[in-house]
Length: 342
Image (cartoon, rainbow, N blue to C red; front, top):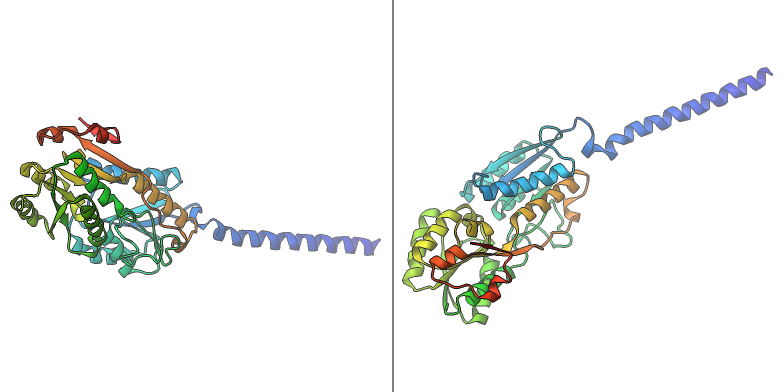
């Protein structure tokens, strides 16, 4: 009897030991499996962007970004801290801003321009970075390929489809058939090269001569329009670039003063009084960028997340501006427009 009780007691001890070991393993493993969402942990995101949200258009983009994060469980003031750094139209500031962001050791960086993404890549090769509005991520050396970016950078790319610029020139030509010479507002850096090549190919197909006018700073814009007028351009294109976005109002005002119909890459230009825009939907891109942030914070590697091309392209036309320019929009264009501002 005594031997039976002894062996029964030993079994209970063994079972208790197994239970304690199993519980210990579970406790130790839990933080590793749920680190991104563990209670009390605050994730830090550093943002590198050109234009601060001082206009409704820019504010709308960042609101779409934050809303999507909230939908996925990331709430500022609870488990998320976002620190913004704005270049405010001075792209030369990006390297120092990127260094400042990296010095704070964020869990992730969001770079909302080609210059911002380039500066982030130079500043760190380890901190995950989600890019937005990058013109040519492969050409810029930011990623190895669209399917497998490699490295620490991924996200939705604005300019993977450079055919957007060619399509924009085609729409301008279809709207204003008499156009034979088109000015092209360009910028002397690599981020414009792919777009400019696309415009030149489209120009040859459409029998339109292009006049490329480069600008480096806002003070050169007035001279650029004077040059286009002097060379008798009858329309102009604005290539996608953070500089153009930052100075949209000035560009639209100069276009109105010069009486030149223009094709823009961002709807924000048309909302500001511009003639026509064709390109990716900006709030949609910022929303999609937030999905990348969510996946990475939950353990995905940036190099394994494919870079998405624009899927939601929109044509926006301002009829008030067309009337001021003395133009009649063909019905074939109006029926294809996603939005018409009257």
